[in-house]
Image 1: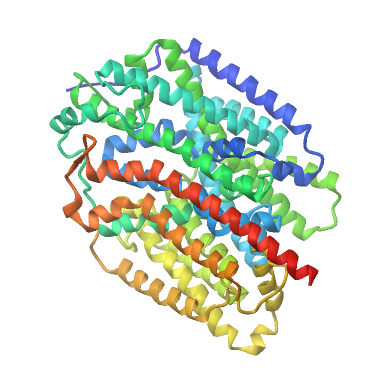
Image 2: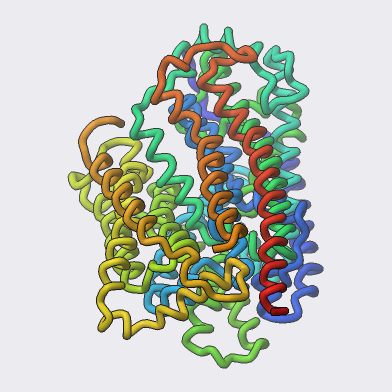
Length: 548
Length: 86
């Protein structure tokens, strides 16, 4: 089969669409920032965002450039197993809301690290912030590089200029708008990317002969027989039980630890609105995610049946290629604007999280008496500084930072999620347990990744490179260390006298909405023993060879 | 311990299991390979069931979760208010 390198034929329309969308982003950012009366408003949008807007914003922050580029490329490479990997990402916001979002919203937290500071003390929160900033930088970096590559393709300029110009434009509108601007822009970006993805996909399906083109997310079963004939292994599950089990600690719990998702819950006007937003999130997320699988399906079908195959270097451009083949030029331009909106919405949320952690979780704790005006200026500087750092790193990124955004999910699952979940739901969790767990499990996860000691890994290939095998071992390790160290130190009065454990326990009751304190609530020792035992068993299972 | 607390723990455990199941049905199909290969709505079962449950199934679970946990919040608030009055 002849393979052709794909290139954008006529970028003018793309430039017009992208330029127009940036003007709208700036206008929304500019008008939104007028609503922020204080630094708290700047970081939480005055805790006033309604359910539908917040649901759109949640979905938008989660849908990165990968929705348009990376996912379809990986479906082309891995076929259906990658669909299973993606399906579970829809659980993020519902689980965050259920496990810790609403208690932290009740507490008035800015970021999950804010909760860690109140619950486990300053030292543990600094360690958490370092891990979170590393995770956010890895995440933002991938998006920044992706957006720069789209700019490079669109404007025909070199990568460095594309990165600096594109990066400056993004950092500008995020800094101006704060969380108000980011929230309203994210809602607009979600609508833009949803329309730009789903409707052109319907036209592609129709052109390919699909009869269910009017509902692309689910109606393509008539293409299945032809697919099975062309690619008989498309629906094969391929991998073993450990591979599918590892999706839970790596990506489901990993998403729990991503601060920019949790922060969306804190912008809600009240808890009921946050839960309403969660329902809207699953609706919007589902439409686009299911359409992504259809696009991947169509890409594999196109690759298998067309006379001109897609070059492996172009796998990530399958959405653009299908649109250029089956749709008019202006539709392709609209899709490019949608892809950039997807990248931008994620970078915006990442930069807000980095800024909030620097301003609220580091500077505000070191200098708690700063005026609100100074804190607002620090906010602007923290976001623009975080953005500038991302651009500078993206100019010549260290290999370990761009290996895989998915690996960063695992790091979040290992370091942040267990601390927050146990901190919210289990009073005996104490500061000693938290510190030992985050350091022990976090450093082990980094050490057993293939990027540090290539021969010191739990498995090889994809499970190792995206952090699945590391997470299957280290997430339960973190739960095991946290529960056992907490239970052991709890029986040492000399150690417990050094920390305000009673105050920490009272915090647990208050964030669940109880006005009185009861020693019995969230205080089961049996629960701790069960969690420790189950975690240890999973650790041992993960370390045993085979099963992937 | 009051019933609202027990309800909070029960809801959290039940919805955790339901949410995890709806997003990880691939695990069930790989654990029980006999479930694979049946055609449902024109798609292989191991594909369409996880896709539909990961979207529409999840939406139903989340809607019920929102309703019940909102009601529970009201119950806890009422309890807290009555405690303050006492």
